[in-house]
Length: 229
Image (tube, rainbow, N blue to C red; front, top):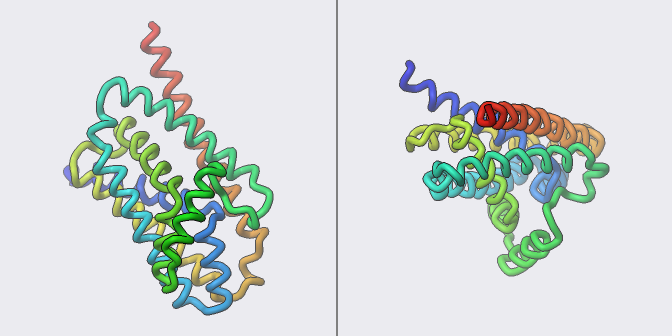
């Protein structure tokens, strides 16, 4: 059993963060809610599957394409600090959200890139709508690159291929549960999934990320204190 424990732990970490990152309101969530209300669960579920597919592709790229880079001494230390700041930024951003009508975004530049890609590809099928909406958002890849750096630098995800695949599998499960659950809830009717409920879920995600950031910051301070002694 000990041989599988690191893989299981990596999968658990991926599941938790995959779920938390999916909760904040963005274009995909709003599309699922709107289309699920109008066209039912099956259509919203296809959008969800498209979004999950692209999310997992970005996650896999982050863990397999950048993993060895994050293991270098100086880079590893720098990414620990970047991860702390990034989690703090995301948590605060989600926590202070005031409306679901203004989807979560990073910068105006990324918003313009996203709009241009969606305009060029012009997806029509439900699956491709979800797929393209995630693909067109460069912030999603950035999220996973920074989170992958954090997981690897902290030793939450081991250097082995199976450890990284375990984390990706956990992310797949976490993201799928959220998007498909949201599709089901939206299909029940908009009245049962109000803007207030969506906003509460987004702020709850922000609180969770701030707690993780605080814990990460405390560990950084302890490490620096040990190094100074």
